[in-house]
Length: 264
Image (cartoon, rainbow, N blue to C red; front, side, top):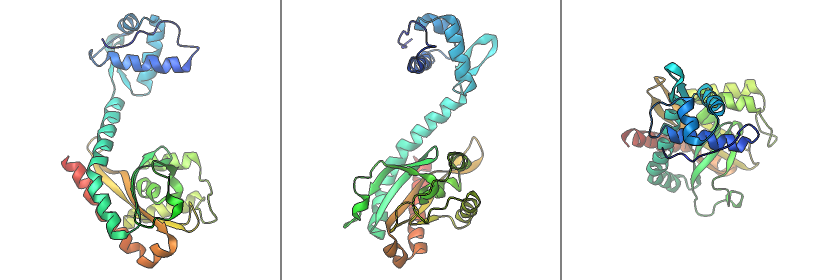
């Protein structure tokens, strides 16, 4: 087996426990099922430590307990693998679509994914004369509740909605929505019209529009948002150009990305 031996006691060192857990996963890359004795022998750890680690990993869904105290990889690992594949494909298929959107709207175009109660922008396409407030912000993470991308995703992804409300609604400007009931109303409206818009809720003078990238999930037999395409720029220009018009362009781009992912 390819695992690295981890002698000693894991109780006193949380980072060491993480290392052991990863080494345990390595063991399952070549053996479909393992018990505590085999894991302990391979990693050079006490059988009690192996039993405890396996039980914790099973409780989190990373492993699944089988008969006679043996374990195999759990469905959570499959979900992680699917997420990784989707995100790699997501970046690959989105490049020409996002570039085309940038050329149509002449503002900042971004591709965001949910990370807990935040949105991580994986990619961005800048228009000429980009507002200086956007410079140096690539790969940034922003609170989902006050971003159009976060709302576009949360409206079609219950897990993101739960994460947002559990984290709490922080005020960033005088326009930020921080009342849970109001945010719920907004998410219902996003589901109805198919896009989200924020007006100076993160930074005064900056507004944004976002559309969800919706994919069919065979495991749950439903459609979920895995990402969002957003357009951001000075509030005056976005309103002048027309939010519904910009939203249509963003929705078209999001739909093209979803279709490309389905064909990938």
